[in-house]
Picture (spheres, rainbow, N blue to C red):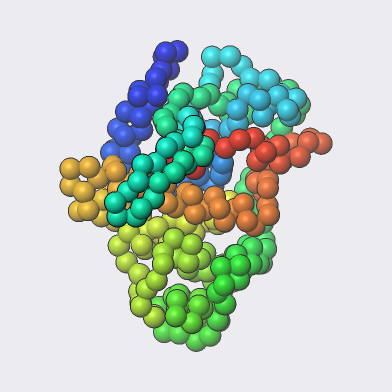
Length: 300
């Protein structure tokens, strides 16, 4: 990976090899934490970034750093995959009858370079400890997104074994009124993950399998972005679930799961209106410049 002449194929191979090695919920949570730090990057690039620089905590392209008055150190780049786009002609499909042109469609990938703040020089930059967002602020951000999706939050007594669930028919998210504020926010984030990623479920149904992992993963990223943490035992089941679904290619299931979760979390973070991470500051310069840079995701 440190070679100067790294091809897109090399990065794809490294990504597949790294994902195939996943064997614990701890490693999965580490990728989700990175996704919260790098919300403009797709899942594949999050894995590539953490593979090359596990300690990275603020990553951007050279042009973005230059707009902030900082310059990158040559030779310390992190290689990622950037989509190559072009207009794509779609021939008529017998089943759908679709025919036409997809504008700005992806036709391949190329190697791109990004740098962590540690490999730049310029105006003083500090990355303070996370945990600055109040739980009440997190609840408001989640609640606003729930309402935008056309659902209502119903806080009331429910059995302890089912502290929250999503009622798709009545478009309600039910949360136990016996939970403390932080735990209630974690359950609300989990249910919002279902709303954003899953179409329907039986009323009161306890989710399971990949759906459970995806909802927990969405909640993990959303809360981590605000400096909060949530434990999710379901993560330990991901390697087994992936192997059961695709015995010959479990990494394809993990990649697909990661892409769905990261894309859903990214969309949530964008719609909250919080264009800068609560865990980052710089002297006299707004960090929204990072969000203005063209994203490399969410395709990877």
